[in-house]
Image (tube, rainbow, N blue to C red):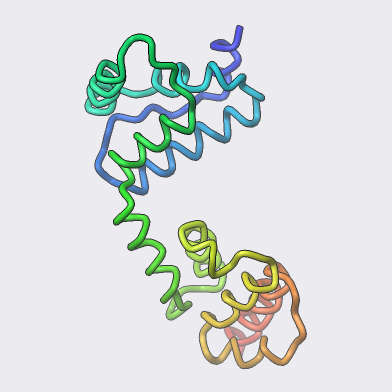
Length: 174
């Protein structure tokens, strides 16, 4: 029953590519499916590992074999091992540094927002509440947009984005 329900969500497979963004995307998508279907914790590792193929499956076979047949895997332990292999800490640190120095540059506000959201999860200490997140985004805006947005007392991330989009549109028409 749980297996059929899981497959209805069309979960992605993971072959073990050494592209950290692919690994991170796969892991978060599978976790999202688990949360959506309220999958019991004892089933999560079994279902996640069923999606591993190629190099990823060989890696998992080795890891689980070394842990022994009586080891009970929980998702948190699987995620730690998975990240160590396919999304290592030094890469997460690099992405955090990219977030720390992120500016809009020649991106549109929408492109900057997408990049901001993607990278912000690797440096949560910089945007750990709504106001700090809004200020961090605002500070990275193109100087011409930032100077116009700063004049407003905007408290939320969405307010800053909305105001920046309005000014960007106005700026493009000029």
